[in-house]
Each structure stands twice: as structure tokens, then as C-alpha cells.
Length: 123
Picture (cartoon, rainbow, N blue to C red):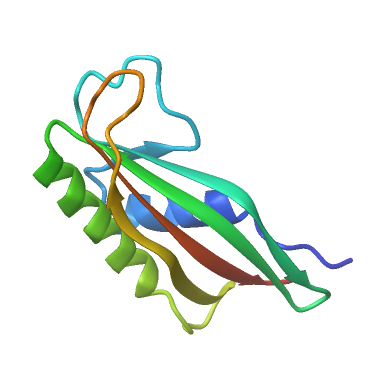
């Protein structure tokens, strides 16, 4: 049986180790309370069966201010790009949409966005 890892869970597990002070998940908590928070969400991707699953992931970082949220997103990208072409389940990491500032439409809180392709190997 060929199984691909959950790209969202894989990215979050790595980021929890690499950036232990950054809270994150697949959904924004109801009360973000102005603290830094990362949301990782799969928006699609492509599959080269049975070798690679290339997940398109959106990264969103909310923070107490524009500069802190920006720095956190840059740290997230750096931590994920460090996984590119390393042994293990991640085959490659590529930024597909560079960081952009987009305050939250509902709350007005500072938020930075970026997108990556995270290719994982089947097991």
C-alpha cells in the first residue's frame, strides 16, 4: 500500500520543533488575542503517482503588529526551506507566492501570507 504523509501535519510538526514559541495549527482559534499565530492550510497541489504528492500550502501569520508578523513568516519560510532536498519524507520545498501583507479582513489584525509547494515522498 502506498501512503503519502499529511503535508499540513508534517509542516506543522517540523515548525513546532524549529520554532517552539510560535503557536500554529490548521485553523485560527476563535480568540487569537493579538498574539502571534500561524495557520497552515492545504489548498490543492498535484500528485506524481506513486512517487510524489506536491501539496500547495498557504501560510498565514497573524501578529501583534506588522513587523513582528512579517519576521515570524520569514522564520517559518526559512525553517521550511531548510528541509528542501533533505533525507526523509519531504522531497522538496518551493515558495510559490512570496510574502505579502494582507491585514485580516474581519478583525483588521496584522497578517502576512505566503504559499509554498511541499513535495512529499510516498511510504
